[in-house]
Amino acid sequence: MLGSIMIISKALEESGFLDRLAEELDKVLRNEYLLLIVVLLIISLSSGFMSDVALVSIFIPFMYAVSRNHNKRLSKYLLPLSYAAIVGGRYTIFGTSTNLVIDQLWFERFGKYLSVFQFLNIGLAIVFASIPALLLIYLLLPNRESVVTSVDDLKIGEYVVEAQVGEDCELVGKTRREVEREYGIRIRSILPRRLSRTGRIHVGTTLIMEVPVDKLPVISSIKGLKLASESEQVEGKEVVEALITSSSPIINYTISDLDVLSKYGVRIVGISAGNRRIYGRISHVTLRPGDALLLMGSEESIAKFMGDYGLVPLRTRGARLFDAKKGAASIIVLMGATIASLLGVNIALAFLTGVIALMLSGAVNYRRIYQYIDWPVLIFIASFLSLGYAMSSSGLSMAIANVLPKSLIVLFVITALMANFVNNVSAATIMTPVALTYPNPLLAVTVVAMASTTTFLTPFSHPANLLVYNPGNYRPRDYLAMGAILLIIALLITAIFTHTIQI
Image (cartoon, rainbow, N blue to C red):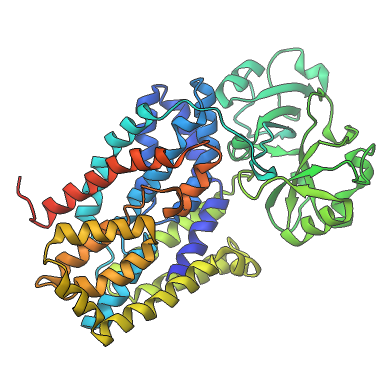
């Protein structure tokens, strides 16, 4: 089931659907605080159905845009982003790996699985209580300058792309300035130039646009607007940013000279040429060291082209185009699998069937299935499950339970500390067998589920925390101080829901 969830969420991530959603929210919600509340809430609720790391990687470019718009550093936004993704996953069984471990150990003990939304009420209560706390964390965080520590952190701000205006294009009749203001781009020129004199965009014109990389999914989703090379079909829609090095043999050639499409089946859909101004077609630009190309095609074709010409991939995330078919298919499959599991279908079978449906629809290439799955995570969890079985069968869990006081608060604190300073899967694996020895095992297991997902106190306690550590230029003390706020909230709400304390 976890492998299937990884595949479905990766397909949704690549579709650009959430990128477009974020862009629309930014246009509608002008108030910064209201925008943050809505975005953090969407991230938290989506985390119950998607990988936390995938969500954070999707919304990092959006947070870049927000920081620019409000003239603040990225450090104000990225830690709340990571925390929002971690907070939200707990309310579904498949939202976090720790819940899956707990569910499996529960099955081994009682012969049946927990409900998909077993932790819905308490999970959502923690989510909604955490949103104001995340705003407080945003206010308390330092406005710290970001640092670039590797080529993966290097961001190309904008690409010059060509796009053809079709008959049904929603831009027809608009002025250049209206389009620039609405979509946050810059139109360098309109070809042919005789049509641009009226100041309005006409059918059949070609737009030379300067587009920030985080707005590529938005531009590619505009109805009737086609990237200039989209008339030529290529296999695959992988989008990669490639840097031209000083030793590359394509230096001093133009894109048209290379004839990449016929030789490799790859489109060059955009170029970032540093300080040089590009007003004509990108195919006529002479390539220089330090230029970056936006490549589109199959992964194999792009890799061959980059290898032959000595290009370096700039980063593994961020650049993607909008794919409505893939986005719609991913959402439908996710909803269908969830509904099927609620109706009694085996949850693993339900999500595996969803993956097969994605492959049959063409939304997912079966050759990429292996890459979509985070194999180290699967192997790690499978290995730790054997530890859980061993603790139960050997009587070790009973021995630990006899030493610990039968207090749900103590159970929460020990599990949370273990999750933050050892590993969250380890915490769930070790403490779930202990919880099963309590007089009310379901309440105790609920406490372990909530505590093992409070990975807020250290950068290494969760991959999402590590993902924002360098871009936000954070310190370990930032996590400790800000994470303590969310941990206390989770502890209080868990205590209320498990009747440990009354209000």
